[in-house]
Amino acid sequence: MERKRLPVAAVVAGLVLLAVPLVLPEWMKFIVTLALAKFLAVLAVALFLRAGMVTFGHAMFYAVGAYTVGFGAKWFGLRDIVLLVPLGAVLGAVVAALVGLVMARYQEVFFAMLNLAFSMMLYGVLLKLYWLTGGTDGLSSGLPTYLGWEPSRAAARDALYYFT
Image 1 (tube, helix red, strand yellow):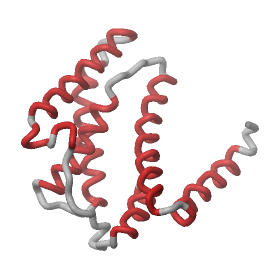
Image 2: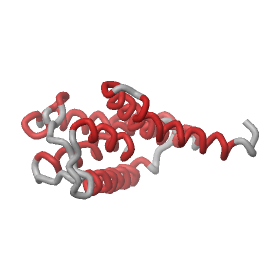
Image 3: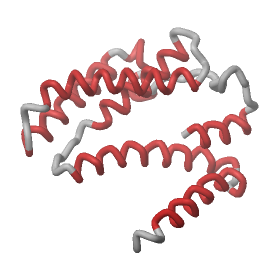
């Protein structure tokens, strides 16, 4: 694609993404929202691949952020997603920085395997602490609020899509 057309393509893609909740049926909005969230994780992996680094451990940081949101909602009564998501991102970044202190010394296959090892250690801990984490079933909580606004279930799907 020519460089001149790239901004136009970005604007068109943005408008399509904004229109998605208006044209999709209710059941599909949740699926598209999950796809967008997973796309963000894939984008991070692609960034590492562009740098020549193979990583198998991004699920660990994704999980730290997700469990931060889940614990905040379930155990601490925080429901505002505008607070919970940045909190999850910050805690995920802190864990990434701590793991990165060790990972920075390795490269190529050693980097990939050590990254996978850290990820599997967290997976094992989350699985063994079923009473706290819900294991592979995860955590459940009520609908989030958005700066104090409590949407209906249908409006919450749209709000979650746009927030993602």
